[in-house]
Image (cartoon, rainbow, N blue to C red; front, top):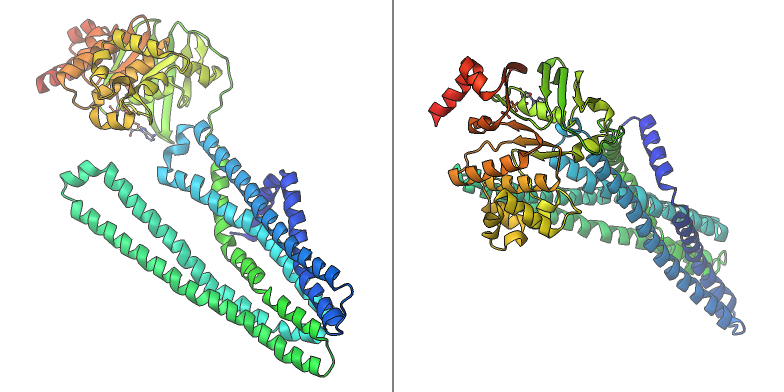
Length: 578
Ligand SMILES: Nc1ncnc2c1ncn2[C@@H]1O[C@H](COP(=O)(O)OP(=O)(O)OP(=O)(O)O)[C@@H](O)[C@H]1O
């Protein structure tokens, strides 16, 4: 990362998080309080020794001891306050970042998802935000506290005795070196354990998701081998952490004691010569022991800074992504369902048109079947009608209004979409159907399922409508899932219906159920069906044959069959295949 962009990144981040002024104020106060009380207690101890204990003076000893106790209580109180409020602050930043990322993901268009894997997005929302919180919020604030403490200790020491300070400070470079070298190794080993654990969970996830393929290809042993390899590597990573921890902390303690020994030796000599008092030596012993924590804090923050900034950069990359859907536009309440494609061209990748000059009129309430070979552009037409994408050239009109001018949200509210693969959200079948219209009641769902002729099928599930989708997911075939999707769409009472018929083989009984439900859903509504099985086309008012992104034939089923063109060929080959 260039230093310029790093600076910009940090500036932007600080600008965003410092809006929570109240909590930051409390943190700042507790940091100052902690530093002062931390510095004061050795200082008071010196006074107690030099002015009360050594001269054997009793008067006022109670007061000064109480003062000493007060600084200790102060340290404890400010420490608690600081830890708690840094956590509060960090969690708020974390929550804000995560919600922003999640929201951004939801308002992004499909191009946004094109080059991003689920794992990558999850990792940015969960891990990268965590890293930013650990290092750039908690780390940075503790770092500030540590730097303040260190500076305070050094100043206090200089005020007490310059020579002794210089000698005591000789152990600091050693401490920094140890924190940098062994501390660095420890942190890297720690990072590795997290990576290994992530690898293990990926293997488990993949084994569950791909269980059929694993079994069908006899890959159980290979997956098992991968898993045990990852487990062994995890153990090794944890052992490395244990080794470095075992080396690091004792070494830091010893170095810290080394400075105490230096203080005792040199301070003892100075005291013997009468150059310093006993109290000063004791205060120095205490100060010398207070280096360790802050030095380690600062070094570890510095150490993790680069990876935290990289995480922050990944977060901003998502937040700044410009592939966003805008929801502005006219609100349509009801549509008659007339759709018109006018000279529509569309390409996903520059220079590769997928739809080429499509002109199509779908009259209100009519049923249109789109047929064509795989890759012909059927799904793309649907993607355009739903405004997942807008045409590169030409336009689509809904009731005579140009699609680009209609708010996506209100348009989609008027469309009932039954995709090829039904996604069941966690929850019950009832909840999954209610997604179609959250204001509907459970009775409505039952009524609609009865209308669609799928009530009996749902009642046969282990817990009827209350069967959980997870359970049902394993029980249901693609066709049966599509039945749920049809109920979901009907509950919405849409003006336009889009059906992407399930491609995979559906048993004849389910097929007739699906077909009946589809026809019920289409009744009185403008309907567009992507027909993979051509039997449904007999119910269409119009068939559109797509080939290589162009409409090559259009007409009623009768007309097209009589014409003996593309549709006739498609139809007869499919019937022959069956
Ligand atoms: N997101 C995308 N990015 C780039 N190219 C795409 C994308 N989606 C589809 N395509 C390409 O666009 C063309 C048309 O695809 P589309 O999915 O519309 O075909 P289809 O007729 O629905 O096919 P199928 O019957 O297999 O579903 C194909 O060549 C496909 O590879």
